[in-house]
Length: 607
Image (cartoon, rainbow, N blue to C red; front, side):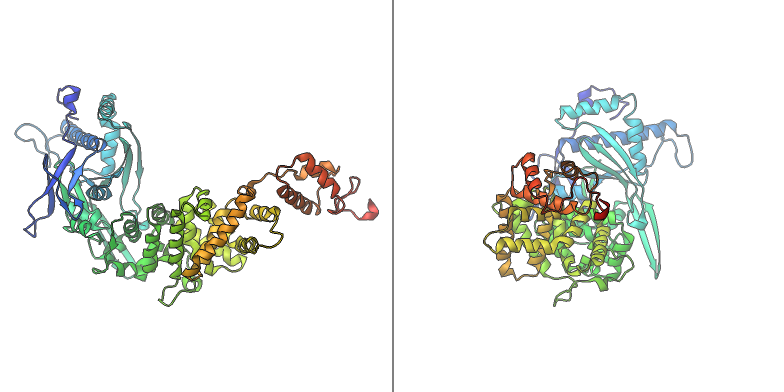
């Protein structure tokens, strides 16, 4: 806000109309950049369902005003503290000139607005007159901190406009790390419920000379230079905070939104070499934006993504944390199968989901198929089957999957299903699990679920076979309960993994029959109330058993006794502790429980 003006609070916050109608400047001149200028009270223009209209929500409009007011405060502060110099001369009014600070909302927020979507994440880009971090520090430490009046006024105004979250907090700084593909220094904050990142327009160059790379990064005041360094044309559209204009500096962004195509502003090899993670961003966008978005093939974008050298750069230059972050967004998005399809078609599976370090991936590949892909095309059919299962509310498998309450983990098991082809002995399995975990920086509980799936797969399938064979008598409750208990708390995910791996190796026309086998097993689990078998508390523990028989020490006899008690407990649901003790006393001899005066582990002659 302008602190030099004396206005009432309502006048001080007099705002622009929240909805700006955007009309296009005449683009007949090929040299004219594509810009949309604001005008109010006019119908929105549309082109193939793309609305060239930016409607600022109250929080977004208030953020815009806050940033412009902070900019004015910075200029006034500079004017008050600067002295005459050759670089800064007083004008006729006696005011001191300063480089103009221009600001834009950029990237995904603008794209989503043009697609009629809402986004709570906003990147604020500044011209080279001031770094984004310096601007954020001034916003936090000076503009908002002066006596607390400014922050209080904005909170009051937020409440007046119906903004749910009036807080301005959470400022934190992230250094750039170009060696790992993190090209921009950013400062982030939470403002009026929006996640705001402050960055600078940048002009990057990456020169490659055989085995060495040299990167130069400079800030610029030319948005067209910054636009060319972005991952996709549709993410290179700017919203000017001062003019409230949409600016398309690549002259392709609006066209690509209209055509539903993802292309890079520069030659794709240059864009992906600058930051290989951009390949995964394009895949994520293709799978999350909906509306038929596809990755361009005509201009070489797909071909560049298949380039072994660029794929190697993704694995060697980008941290597993950043790769895993993009993968998680794909898995949590609306169409993980589409993301998997792109990963498969572009030959990126091994690069994304395995990291064997210096070990040759060629020696660890799956069986492949006739198309030349190292991973089977049937993987996608299994993923489609999973998507269909999740949509079927009446499916026993879907109901059980829902109990995991972890959508990311469900789809991660699908992502890892091709790795079953590498399954072998214990040592080999451990290597595969570590490589899969390392590739995306998977949390411990996630990679352990994969390891347990490898370990227990044969037992899971034999148990499911036993339930489906309709033997007379059918498997006892204890047989299933003890099995589930041995698989552990992730048994649902392990069963799902086994199913997906079988679907991958089974003709599509037999998928329903195979899925029904797992459904029969799950109905059996449900009918016996064994969902929580993995966490069942034993009715008698080791200390209880020793106390019952007056034993001071345990011994080799204890595990068979404990297992027998557990089986009895599963077969006698609802039994009391006293009943369990009575049964165990009756089985003392058959279970080889020693007498109380025996010295466990000593030969008979010493007793």
